[in-house]
Image (cartoon, rainbow, N blue to C red):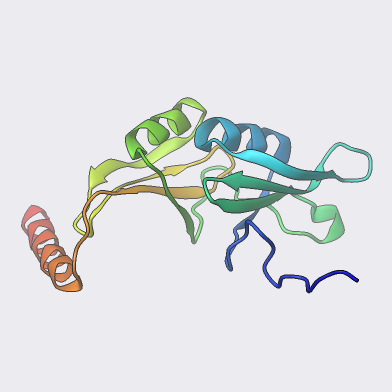
Amino acid sequence: MPGKVKAIPDGFHSLTPHLTVSNAAQAIEFYKQAFGATVLHMAPAPGGKKIMHAALKVGDSMLMLNDEFPEWGGSVGPQPGASTGFAINLYVEDIDTVFQRAISAGATSKMPPADMFWGDRYGQLVDPFGHRWALATHVKDMTQEEMQAAQEAAMAQMKKSA
């Protein structure tokens, strides 16, 4: 008799992004090149021209994705150049290297990496499929009080620059 099934499968966390993209096969290659993703599972759609579902591992987390299926009433990916209402935050060991690797693979820089008041070196890019990624390397542990003081100083500096 099999044991109890885990509510959250091994390797997954409670929250897992699931992206719809305009070309899943190309997206998978981009995520492999830019972020070191490995493909764990891929299910082609009938006919084999699209991908119904793919599971990738990026660092210690999972990323699921699929092709657009408007013909099935499914969702579509972001339109080229359109803004998305979210970003996927990805912590990496070396943001500068990963950021440049993603740019070389076809991403567009939205915010080059810089040291931020909250203790991360942080930057944003948009992948070739329209999804915004916030990359970060944690560089400084801070208390809530230190972070609040650093935020106030950063905001005061922004007001002077405006």
